[in-house]
Image (cartoon, rainbow, N blue to C red; front, side, top):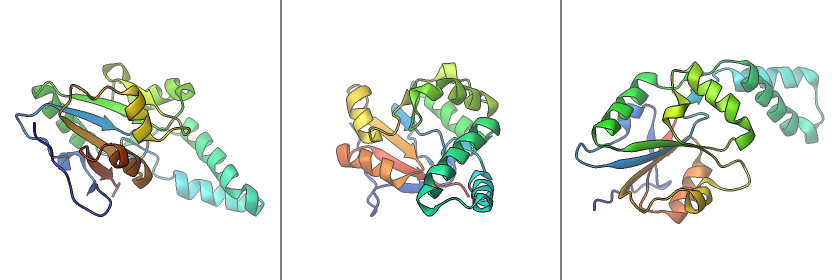
Length: 185
């Protein structure tokens, strides 16, 4: 059994491409990958939504709530782009050669299943080829993995996300899982 731990203050390695995920040829991996901000990208969502909400002059206490509602509407209407299509396909090809597996774990709710699958199809991913887990916001991703994903037959596990808090929730429970923080350039 090989265990690789990345020693950094945040316990994750920062990447901007899936080409940077270190996969050794002779090892079998389980990769648990986030969707929003890691695979799917809505490049103008933050800027456009902040400009619109600024013009509406919401009350200070309602700003965050209304901004999030506007972002949700934006995501429902706009088509996403893939953060790194070529790197993602390359990573999948490497995983297939070693009988490894990739699953998605998103903070979206199960109610967004149809929209999530639509978004994945829009960026060239066939959602039926992957397990998609919906953690929602009521449970951390680390707790979700502990409760719902069987890791017992995997020696080499990688978690990829764009949020530090989700990565920390995984490393707090599973310090031996290799974590990558995906940052869009």
